[in-house]
Length: 354
Ligand code: COI
Image 1 (cartoon, rainbow, N blue to C red):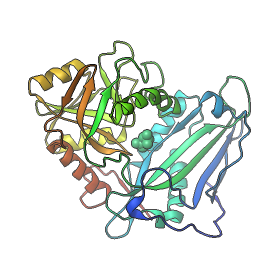
Image 2: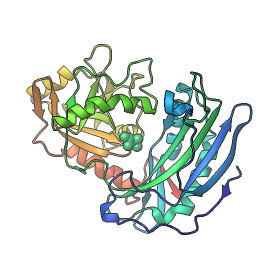
Image 3: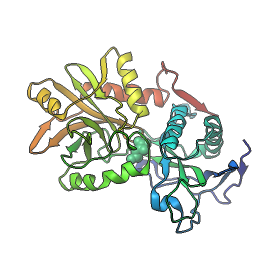
């Protein structure tokens, strides 16, 4: 693939790594490629990071035909940079593309685009503990048209953002609120796609949760309102009777790459793991019977996030002693050690950046 490169005249000053927060600082350059029906993808380019013009009728602004991904580049102690399972992100982007009637990208071309951009922006990968360079590839409907159809003009972009912890709590436990009435997605809908609609659908209930003092919403299935699905920005895990369990991929939850990594790492650590339907009542029952050992979430942004409290209706439980449990702590350490190259990579998940 030909990528036309235009470099910035004056690189921006690098941010203070001790205070990165999440998702507010962007690097010097971005990747863009356009798609036109009948012509395919064209005009691959890397340009200075900047705003771009959009006709107010641009379809993505009205109908939400958009998909995105999230992955990270990590700086190793020896100064080199590496990625974690990037091809899985582009494969998932293509699954989301199918669900949203957006054109798929060539996964190897997307890798080439990402690698070229990262080689230019390598200095932006922070090295302070727990920091990384968050990578946001996304595809948006670009045709200016006030009518409903899938857009014949599309744009694919990659932007980069140096980040610290996603939750202000860091690895400290978060409190989650199980919504008794709001629904994020239903089977047969878009729940498994990484698309704006699912995140927009989560905002209202998340505000309620936050007003009540909780960090995030734990969603139940949209039909029976009984089975646990996921948290707005993470998949969810329970440790019950020494087994690490997570909701099965029902079609309405996101197939998290960190979720899959946690399942594989936990099995590699010799733990019993299972993907199955989990009723919220069974979680509370397991707690009553002293069998619920831990709850934690997983996601690229959140990494592994212990859950200290769960509230559902008028019932609220403190998980264990409310702190991070040993299973979440070990998985967090093992995962981070692989991602930051401090430990071997038994699953061959790492891709080095030149
Ligand atoms: C991620 O974990 O990468 C996500 O896309 C979640 C988002 C809410 C930051």
